[in-house]
Length: 385
Image (cartoon, rainbow, N blue to C red; front, top):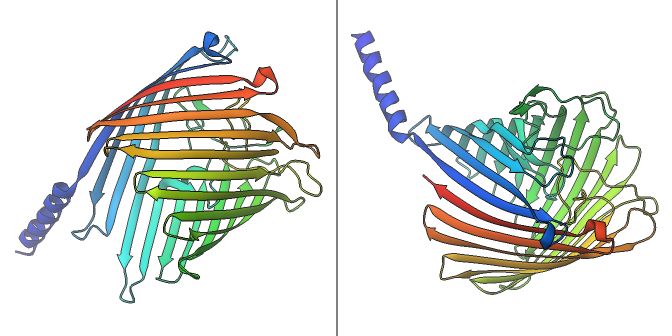
């Protein structure tokens, strides 16, 4: 009888789990053209099939397992080095995690994530990638606290680029579709006060990245941010990060964003970013995840530059999204600030149906040095299923 009851219970739990199982996917076709000018545009074709799944482990959905992976084919004819094949195939698992989310009696919220998942630092420009690790957060109405620890060495270097020193012991290993990334141990602790005063939010974050390659390239950061609304239609965000390599130097990355929302369907923003170079006692800022700082041909990191941007976004008839931005970029690699160039970008997306979207992007960098000129066009079609 006990065995029969156990079988019935297990069968019921399995049936409940299977009935709540969710899955889906997105097919994405992106056709891009890049060159120094319109006459020299060359094709960069990307086709991606992304699949995801989520399986609750209990009836309240407070515990679940989530997974996501994709296959990407790319034909990139924009590389001037013709010895490199323009064809590449990439397979990657971007998410594979267990999540526990529990609301406690004192109206606090506890959440635990373990496995492979994305992590973004508070500045938005240092660590922005998938990692293998653990994240724990505990939230109250007046205080949120979280800690994170991860490992980068199992990531696919074809999908994410991690910044290493110029001279490194890292050697790419793996197969053609999956190559192991440089091995680092990123970790972070974050404290947020969501209602400090007048609904302003204060955030303090400590972030580190321990080098496992033997390059002695340990990086440490402390970020302070303050954001909120001054009025119903005017908001702001202030962020500053102090960085250091092995605690032997000091660097800085700071940003200020002002946002004006005169209507629910339109927003106007202005943003300024400074990433230190050899500026007085400051040294060049070094992040962890590679990110393009401007639209120029050299695609620099956020280091030794000043960038100011004015932009706007809008929604038409709840189906069409439009955006435009204009910016000016200066180099501050040394004590001298030099004008680098102007850039602009226009973009749009049309939600044809709930599961079908068509988009486009056009950007151009008009540089002081003609070698940095760059024009890019792309058309994107995404189908969800």
